[in-house]
Image (cartoon, rainbow, N blue to C red; front, side):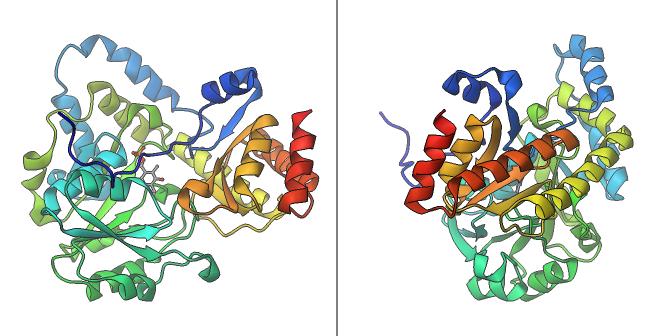
Length: 375
Ligand SMILES: *Cc1c(COP(=O)(O)O)cnc(C)c1O
C-alpha cells in the first residue's frame, strides 16, 4: 500500500546548516558564519540553558504543570485569559492547530506569494486548498488591504505576515483591521508576528479585545533564541476557549521547552540586546551593501544580487551562509540574517567582494565569479 496522494504537497526547504556546508565543501565549521535561518546570533539566554539543566531529571514525567505555568506567564504578558494562549511546538505547530480548528475538507486559505512555506503545507495536511495574493517587487513588496482583498474570495483563513519573510515588509495595524472588517465573519485573519519583537509596528494584540476573527502567531525561535527547542504559540479570540483541548496533540510542548521558555521570558536583557543589534545591523547592511535592499522590520534583510543561486554559492565558499530566495520564487534575491556586529561586518565585506567579482552579472559575471571563488 501507499500513503495518500501527496503530489500537491511541497517539501519545506530549510536554510543550510553549518555542519552540512562544512562537510559538503570540506571546510572547518569554525570558518563558517550562518546567516541563513534568522536565528539569534547571541544564542539562547543563559538562564534558559540553566533551566534546561535544572529540569533535566524530570523528563520521565509528562509536562503538566510546566505547560500551565508557561501558558499563564504568556497570558499575563499579553493581558489575555489563559485559554487564549495555545502553546505549540514552534509557531509552525500553532499553524497546524489553527487549521485543525477551522478548515473543513476542501476549504481554502489565502496566503502571500512569495511567503512562508508552511502555511500551504499545513493547509494541505488538513485537507484544505490554497489561494495566493501577490507580494510584488514592483510595489516594493507592500501588502495593502487592496492587494489582499482583490485576491480574497471568501477563504476560511487569511494570512498576514508582519514582518513578512523574506521581504521584511510590515502591515500596519490599521490595515490589519481594515482587512478583517472587509472579509466575511467566518474568515479568520492570522497575523504572523514571528518577527514582531524586531518591528516598529504595533502588535495585532489589541484587536483581540474587540473582535473574534483575528489570531496571532508568536515564537520563541527568533528574538528569544530558542529555535532548537521548538516553542511557539497562537493568541486566539476569547470565545474559542474550549477549542484548544479539542485539537491539541496531548503534551505537544515538552517539559524542557516550557521551562526554558519561562526562563527566557524573564531575561528581558537578552531580548533587548538582540533587538538593538538587529536594528543596528539592518541599517548597517542597508547602507553598506553595494546592492538594492528593502526596508525590513525583521532580523534579516532582502538583497537584490542578480543570480541569487550563484551569489549564495560564492558566499558559501567564502564562509558566509545566506538564504538563496529562489525557493521563495525570488531568483534574484538573497536574504541575510542580522548577525553580531562582527558577523554582520564580515558578511557585508564578503557580499561586496563577491558582487564586485561578478561585475554586472549575466553569463560573463557568472563565469568570473566561479573563477574567482574556485581558487
Ligand atoms: C520562523 C517563522 C515562523 C515560526 O517558526 P517556528 O520556529 O516554528 O516558531 C513562523 N512564521 C514565519 C514567517 C517565520 O519566518
